[in-house]
Length: 485
Ligand SMILES: C[S@@+](CC[C@H](N)C(=O)[O-])C[C@H]1O[C@@H](n2cnc3c(N)ncnc32)[C@H](O)[C@@H]1O
Image 1 (cartoon, rainbow, N blue to C red):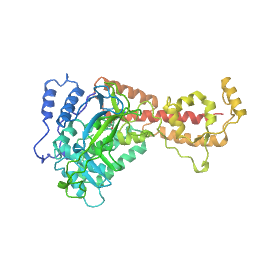
Image 2 (cartoon, helix red, strand yellow):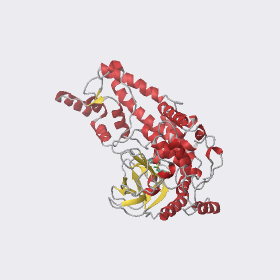
Image 3 (cartoon, rainbow, N blue to C red):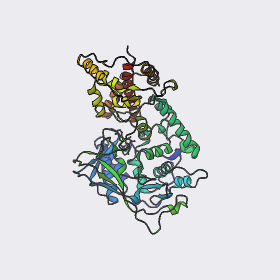
Image 4 (cartoon, rainbow, N blue to C red):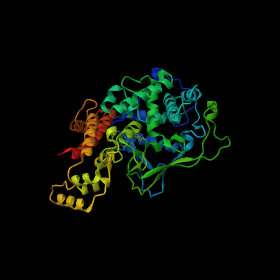
């Protein structure tokens, strides 16, 4: 996959204006030159991920960070971290000094950030009115970083190891055309509301697109924060370089841990204090730890959602992707009409119609669409008497099913009402069929694999709507069971 970062990275200027570099001498070796040289000499022959990995290794070395991982193309979304060696459960994979992170603790109001000017961040902190939330402040810090107004490390990191604006897949960084590709009005409206909020909270020029078809630098920075920041304490959130390259898995092999910051002589300053005083060295580390044995070569993943999981809508809005091939924690938003409040479908009836094995498979996670559909509907486990059970078993043995007789009128009415909602959701957007979308997704993915020019944002949108339609169709199948005569 061809990333804009590194090879394609062209220096852009904020809002089309020249960037004034205000910060002190660069302390990080100038990798950009090395990279630019390498890219200029043999741009086609040096694999992009190798170039990125070289930079990653150099940057880590500069901060005495042991690199037991490499960067590579993850196959799921952009780049990821890969184990260079075997890890055993509990072992540290990477340990990032907190002093190079950008951390805001909402409880104490403390901000820790490497030395630098950070003018937009300072402006945001000092701004009158409601204090800006931590994620917007950190978004401003990334704007500073990419403009060369933060610190040299973050400038380099933002330019090469954060996704370039054309690869930001969070809907709030998209224009109307891309938003429509999701075919989901709730996300479209939410993204536009978020854009409006940013426009009202900050100087309007911060929302000027970098180029037509691209987000503004504010949207880019904010999206990076929303999708990459780690929770480092009850109310502390941080941009943690290197560790933030770990991708999500529902069955992760690693987790992050924040080692508490040792108290410094100066102590933490409040984010409301003068900007220069906010910059101070923070002790402690953020670690990526193996939560199971990890063989060398394996991708190191963490869970973004915890055990309970997130819906696809939340994954898309916050992280810009929907897990491929189903998500048992996904849910549809369906409303039981007032006239049917309290009504539900009998699980035993579905079990009879579908067969116990299918339901058992779903419960064991083998059929994520079915489990998500079952959980999206008001289904209740009911007691089935021995006579009904015997009739159901006989029906199943004879291949006729329906041992429990017809569905009740209430079940039919409920199924009818919910089916209309499912159909309305399926008809959102251009109304392309699931089959058409699957074909389009396959084409786009093939193009991607062949290193073709593909808009990764479009791929993310089509993948999202494919996953959503699969779930909607699974719900339709279940509802039809109650509607058949
Ligand atoms: C914390 S970053 C991880 C590094 C990222 N892959 C990159 O290229 O910089 C989070 C982003 O990675 C992508 N991502 C992470 N896990 C993913 C997954 N399981 N499937 C698809 N995309 C994923 C999404 O774009 C998400 O916003």
